[in-house]
Image (cartoon, rainbow, N blue to C red):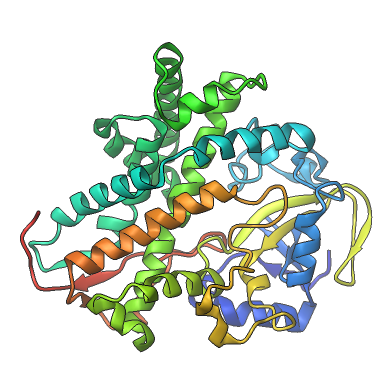
Length: 402
């Protein structure tokens, strides 16, 4: 690894990521040498074409973490082990035909979700959350709303009861915080998922878990449980950040002001612009080179780790579309990944319905909503991986609950 490798961390990922990605391309090119926590070397792929190549070739750039040439240097307490683990049984680290079968099982289970039922669940939980804050005249739309909505909807689709929803919200958010409560949150989620699988084996229903259990490809309960937990975690935080980042854009950019007074087309436009300019999933680990190769003018060694720079690739000037087209429905961004390991299309649809419904309910119920602080004072969570607001303080005229 080159001596001028860029640390994948620090405040600039929070305060000025766009400038940071531009500097990486200027100083290092489309494939930037980086160091992870503990000075662990890796590559960050910030070129659009290069990222397309990496994600489109699962043989050369494998999802098999056993290939990593740095395992001898990784301590047992390395903070990124939950993200870059070894021998993990979830779909994230399976490859080849088995991965395609597992992805098919997930896609089939989600594709069978009734879109009207999905929107109904999203509206009901969103209204419930707004009822809890609408009489006060002020709220934090991250902690009191966005971080509470997606997992409630996903839990209902899985087959959990409404009474179990709040506990799952707490568990998921504790896992995301990564503090001392993270292990307890993970245990609660795993225990709840195992119990739901046992219940649905005994009494199948019309839900995602029952449909996955009916799959005939011979998956174990552990595999199904792991995939369900991955789906819930991957669906919750990015969707919550999609809601928060879109609301921030609509509340701070005059182009979207009409949406705050009953417009709806601009909601979809703001959501699409966020996926290009402010995507929740900024950088994703990872791929491992299965042999020595060349990428973006760099010599990649067998076993090297490549981090997928989704936001960096989205802003690559070599393929950048005209900014005026971003809100016109162009979805050639990398926000949901690409290739056989991308986010399954039915999962993308679920996330979009939940996010759009969540935003629309806010605008319907709180029509004169406005930021309670200067736009420049809004802060982001300090993470190079997921980009979301720490809080979104707003004020509005108090209204009665429904």
